[in-house]
Image (cartoon, rainbow, N blue to C red):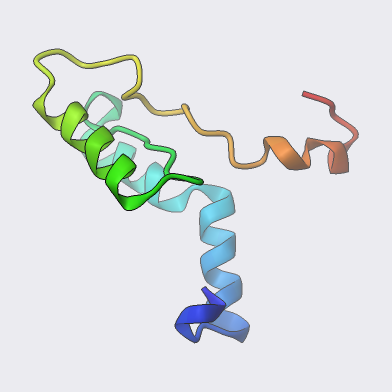
Length: 85
């Protein structure tokens, strides 16, 4: 986000929003869990992400890869809380 020129409060708000899952929570509240698909794009190329999204939207039935709660953004930081996962 710093590369986009975000700094100070804007940067903090965006990081906080990501950590708390605000967008995911809002989407589930508005559309329901069965209509929301959480996708982990970490470390993937644009082509890989596009391929995954096309697979999801063209599938005839909902895949196990398409669900809420699939991504745990905090798992690498549980040690800070004294939790090992």
